[in-house]
Image 1: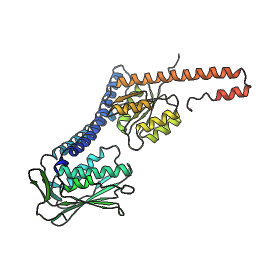
Image 2: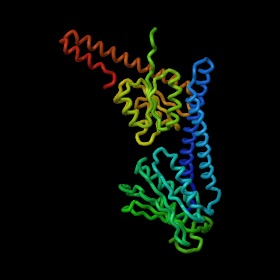
Image 3: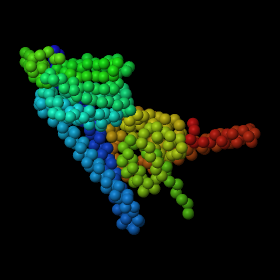
Image 4: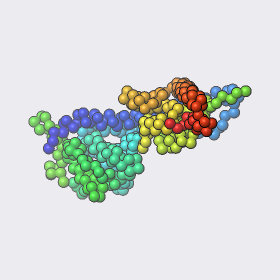
Length: 237
Length: 164
């Protein structure tokens, strides 16, 4: 089992940085719209004060736009907050549907992302004991690589399937693997292994699967390495 | 009374609401504004439009701002282009300048500064056109001393500032 500690160093910071950069870009766009629209309202007020007739439709559209962008801003900050709190604890009970929805929201802030859908879940939520931050990073990387190769027209569907008591399978359908020789690469597989997740790839079916154990625990070896093993001690799948 | 010519602007950004807001404001300021939501739309509009200045968002899905900048500068000799970005870096500023961008602004920007930059870009365009036309006229004058009337007409027909 690889030394997982290094994987919680720079790579994690890089992931955190990338996501926050895309969130800040989104917030900048929102602020730019609010700023320009407020400026337009100011220009219209000035016109009205000099007696120039002002189109009431333009006023209404502008105020509606500001209200919509404020809500969009709140939603973006909500996602940012959820993402920031995903590092609060290294291992925690995690609703996989919530996690996938969060990652999909974060991916939507990327300029090159296309249509992304998490299959609706019916019944008790699929909950596993895992490291949400690391799992998010793995899912995010898979989605980013797909859209980098497939382009904004590429569609991706993500489904969660329970595996009785041994955990869950996260299935990425229509993932773009054609002409992509080295994906998932060793780096991603090691990141997955650090939380006892296995990546399986079927290039013929354009399908990629993550096998997530029902629970993991972190153990220290010689006070140096930290590794994740399935909580019941069984080999991963 | 002489009517002041309106500056013809092409605004390109994938954020539709931002595009609408800034387009409305610039129209109130007296600019003649056309908008495009992506690179392909911008190139098509420029082919039909005869724009003085274009404002391009750097980061767009599909064809990004630098690709559009490159194509517009190649196909429209005297158009001036201002780049807008949400994340300015030295490298992207240098790249845009090398490709011929007139100015490079980071969002959020001051609206009055944008208007100032647009007017400066327009004057730079007029100056370039004037200098180019002056050179062509001088060349034609020289030719006219030795050309037939038909040859002279052909040379005059080449005075087209939208084609390289």
